[in-house]
Amino acid sequence: MELYINGEQIDAALENERTVGDVLKSFELTCEENDAAVIGIHVDGRKVTAEEFDEEAAKPLSPHTKFEFDVITKQAVRDSFKKCAELFRELEAQMEQIPVNLQSGKDKSVHLTITALADKIDEFCHIAALASLFDDYTAATIDGKPFADFFAEFTPVLADFEQALKANDTVSVGDLAEYEICPRLNAIASTLEGIA
Image (cartoon, rainbow, N blue to C red; front, side):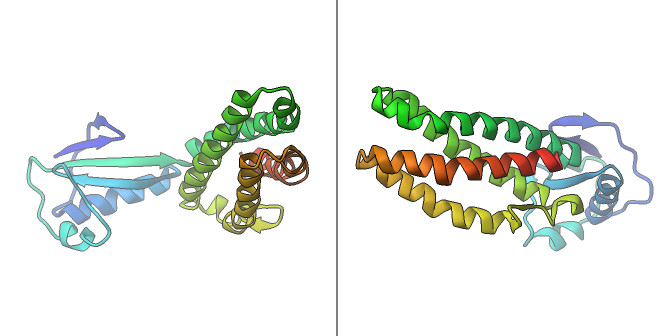
């Protein structure tokens, strides 16, 4: 049997495992004991989906069965949240400068800030989805709201901001940046600093 975790080969010996499912169950228990979670499984080079799991688990082991696991640890989530908190603090400061940058013709700087904001929100949502695999984070909220609800309310604000930018409405851009977006970025960063 070959075993790879996040691309690195690991020495592992079989105990009483006879099927693919025995190995998967044993590995899952090991992950739980080490504050980790499996986020992807490949057996003999083929991705195992949720629909195929039972069928794949019933297969007997062979001496050449190859397992590849993608694993996330609770510490990696914590580290990612800490990094995101720092980035959202930086973005908050950059967003405060958007009205001034627009008025002084620094459109490229504004565009870079907005692109970074979209990228960081996307990255945060991905990490939040992974964090939900750990009990420590399932009850986490931003401003008293579950992550999904917070972003459901934030999305229309970002759409309004985009429209104001397209219309070159610097007053609306400034107001949205200062009164709507910056406080939300602050709330995200504060939450992440508290749970990281």
